[in-house]
Length: 380
Ligand SMILES: Cc1cc2nc3c(=O)[nH]c(=O)nc-3n(C[C@H](O)[C@H](O)[C@H](O)COP(=O)(O)OP(=O)(O)OC[C@H]3O[C@@H](n4cnc5c(N)ncnc54)[C@H](O)[C@@H]3O)c2cc1C
Image (cartoon, rainbow, N blue to C red; front, side, top):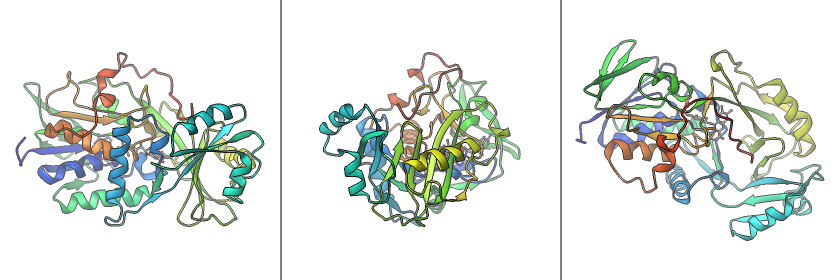
């Protein structure tokens, strides 16, 4: 690497912006997006940073957590540390209590405890043995503010970030990346980072087979018609496959019910009606105010990208031309993992140690590369 190496980042979602932000201190960074900056899956993410509940190695979780803390207060970005309660279905209480006994950062609460600790938050908890409360490594952010701040910081440090610029292919010589082709002509590069979300499998089909496929999430914002105190925890219900968090305006953001889709482009931008019913009829039995007035249902542009094990692929695969780095398959975790994405991309470009093992994100962990894999649920 030299100080003047140019990196073209294809895709200005949270993955591409995090990569640009991580690389810009000592690279010439150009970001190209076919649409608007942060206009893909990133634009409607719920901002849940539920790192404690994810299947992540501690070093990965800690890296992301430290980044959000350090970045808090930069530009318009605020990070809100907030515990998360995960409801424990009836019959699973014993297992949950054992989980809590293993960690000081996790507590088990009975339904009675929950009503006492968070008065007014829950309604009928008779179908549950209680909840696990995760006290550390959970919080939330506003994805728009976060993306805008990553973009601004990268921009100020010299990155050039362009919208409405479609990259149509890679330029390759002697099995080395030399740039990209775009609808407005070629752009030279020493490295190309492909962070094109659910389009990545097709975009790189001539170079590598990636086991990823589009997945859709639902999310809506509801006015619960009750006060949501600042201490109200974030939450999730694995039975209904939903999560929720307070918003800064005193509303509740409820998301979940993710599933695979074949054709993201034809999918509606609005939340599925069945999800609205789930929240307003079913979840409302448990979470007070979930049947309140709906404030926002424009949840779902395009799609996120599922991977067979629920973790992303951030790698410079051996079979691809030198200089190519791929970042996709975020499986509903792209915002909370974005600091890790930035560090992993930088590790591949600058040949640096990111401080965590990269093998959890390597393509060669998958023997089968077909997109016909079953969905790995967030809720098991
Ligand atoms: C409703 C919902 C709720 C979510 N909640 C959370 C959450 O709480 N926490 C969390 O961590 N994650 C959450 N996610 C997931 C998260 O949003 C995604 O994992 C993340 O945004 C993926 O980022 P990305 O950069 O890979 O993709 P995208 O944001 O989709 O960005 C890809 C970009 O590539 C561009 N592109 C594609 N092809 C080309 C091309 N040929 N040339 C140029 N540009 C191209 C696209 O225009 C797009 O802007 C949620 C997602 C949804 C939909």
